[in-house]
Image (cartoon, rainbow, N blue to C red; front, side, top):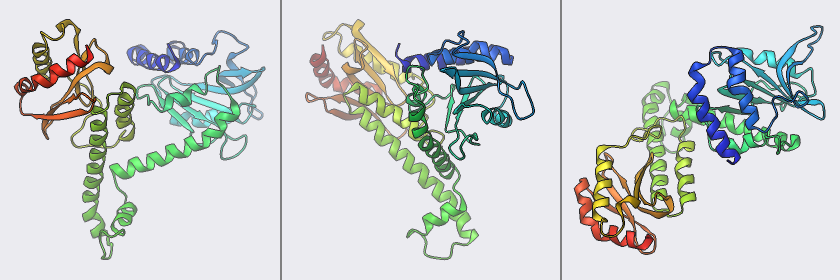
Length: 361
């Protein structure tokens, strides 16, 4: 497996065993040490991965951090571990003390689920209060995997990580601000929008309160339009790699923002989708063996494939409150959208489905 596959597999394993972990020691051995193994470190080699690393603080001697990763016998990453049952916020100051007593440039605070990466961007040799990267194994983002890969033993370049840490930190902080404003617009943001040609009168508190719900609806509508546009682009795209990237981008862009008519967090195969699958198999029974026809249910469409390959898709079907439709590529691989009222309307598209099947078998 490549690194991306390894990380996703590790995240899946974490989810499957987390409920059986009760203590800090169990957290360390069950998921934290395996996490750093995924990053290429030999966690059983004390010249590389040191448990109970001594980090004396002022007059206090014998202070120990849970682990330290060494490079040429010098610590480069300090790791403070907490139980999977504990929140991390109240422990930040403890790692803060350790950081200032060693030559390490990075510190990681983790409870096995959340990994917070710190450095000293704000003041040299003093750990920042806020992490420049935070990874949640229960909500792993595609865009975070390349950043995590920089901490892999084979890729570790201190200067390169520091160069990108500042940008990562402030992009993350800005994203949080935008997320909060979209979900719960502040008075200042409402005034800003109203002042851009929306409302010419005095922006009193009553005016702000009256327009705030409208602005929230407007933002939600914009996000929904953005998502629908991306889904339609993906549906019309015959390139598997770009298709998957487009769908993934939807989840990334609207993460944490409320939407009214799209749920990207759950895939549920409906009776109508299964019935449409069997209808397509019936239509194509004399064109292609039914054993070669598969389906793939995604967050945005129900796809029917030949040989279970996304590059050989027959059609994509969407059942929505706003209207049902099926997309079938034509001879130049351009996705043509056909509205349907019920699954039985798929029979009316038999010719287009047969032509599509003939072009890829």
